[in-house]
Image (cartoon, rainbow, N blue to C red; front, side):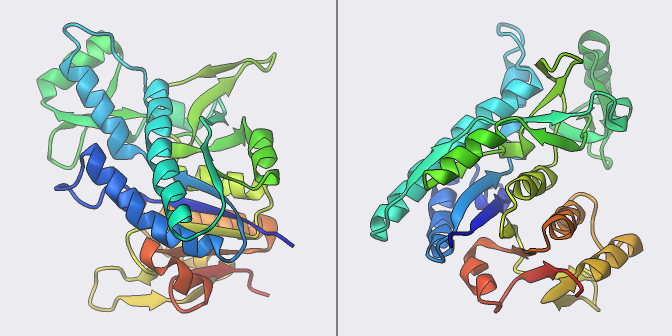
Length: 315
């Protein structure tokens, strides 16, 4: 029996550091990550790959800002769509080449994906997700007056635009993803959490200026597909308690109950590990299947139970 896996690639799978941010650098990172993805495919999974896009959206917004004197601005939902296509293309090419190198058959397709959010989500009344470049207070206030931006001072480094980050409710293209998996196609989808859209009373959709958490959207996708495995690839090989403190310890296995207790204790950072743990807990609760958090180079070791952190039911 063939199983389904959803693999959520973190930013480090695309941009290694500030010295390697160009498009060729990002493609090289995709090539390296693809060697590890092939190891996952060797287990016989039908695979959906999701990915982050934060820095890439930031690049588009910065270019848009610099050219505002002669070109129209790019709406945030269009930025997400643009990056889905560009990043998906890099993953398609890199993974297709790696499959050929490994002597394996496989077609990789990127799907521009929309994610429905609730128009009444409380996040819309409290924009808090920073996007784009840092600005002076004067420029930030000007953007707020002229463009209706919400702006906020960010950790003493300047002002940034902030946008809502509503919870994902529905993957619009879920049936297309199922169909492609049924044809043994490797699907790249829900990039950057999906293009945020809302539905009106008649079911018509419209893009909104928001950012959806990639891990939470990937978890929703994995639950909808009743995936057998949900794996988050990030910068660290395992989850740690007391991270970056003298008493730091790694965790090989974590039950849902333990994970919820650690979240309540504030063990995980809101901007990094917390949404990953939340996404895995939601998946395990809904499906009864396991989730894994690890880095790209330990994907195969994690599948063998020799690395990574596995989240599972407590029974």
